[in-house]
Length: 443
Image 1 (cartoon, rainbow, N blue to C red):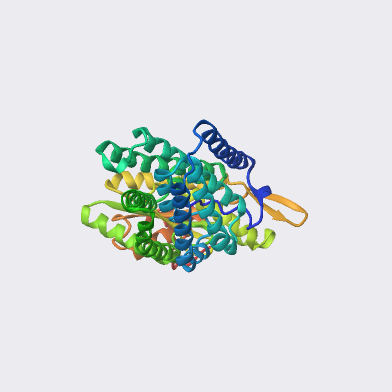
Image 2 (image 1 turned 120 degrees about the vertical axis):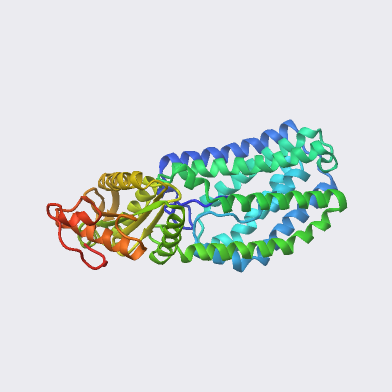
């Protein structure tokens, strides 16, 4: 399943009280729906339980467990790197079950695989139980939906005809879509402020899910043609794929600021240099926005550093919401953030960069962050930021110069009274402006 940015849902126990009520309603509704689907399917189409069917359930579940055990170190590392839900690659076995078994027996495979996955990988990593229950429910619904689509062929072997193969492809899409929609809705209901596009996940995650489901179809085809024991041949490439995912996840963790989920300073600089080079080669332009929280030390001193971290996280989410997906947003220092905007038209960006900066300033000024204090909680609602803006090529030809100009403009904004936006080299000549400073973090 796609990763969820909501990190507020407690510990490994049933920390359901910390979950927003509307999210609880979604979780419970999906779980009840999963139970109803299984019960109705069992009543309307009672499964013809045969020795072959039970053998298939046993082998698929066993292979799922062997897969988990063989990748246990990798999976635990992934949980340490990122505590949020992510693709666990178990859909290889659950999707194969959807194609090979009646709905109730396929559900048995899901329950066995996910119970073992929880006991061996997720619980030791502190993964909350209610998330596991929700994840399992979404997979059960996805399995039944995929089985219904594959079953439109009238029960014939879907791998022996062109129509059957089309139905298998549609079943792949159905499984992925059902799972994706349910998880995205839950993310949006979590109150994390995540956009629809970010909730859907990165293209690489979607391609990985598609690859995993395709492997599940290969398992089902091998079992259908040569017997269930042949499914074991999928294990080696699956373990290799699991390790490849870990490498990508470690790379992402190394480039991400843990408190805000934004790019860290080094990664932002690397990607910003590439974006500036591309703009230079194509005749385009970029703008750099340097954003500093006004009097952030007061927040830390008054409410504590944990409250300060919550403010930083809220500002990170606000920045992502106010820029486009291909713009670069990073945490530059303790209370300083940086954004790179790219465009093809120089004049247009010069105007719009200031508008984006002011929109960011106003949005952050409207943030309300509830934090815990001794004896209860309080809301921090008086945070503001100052913003300095520079553009290429008007203010400089390289990234260091653009950062220097943006920093000087930021300092001018602070000198003029804070909670302001200043743009370019002329900022120092505006009322309240001042001379440039070296690019270190302001207060």
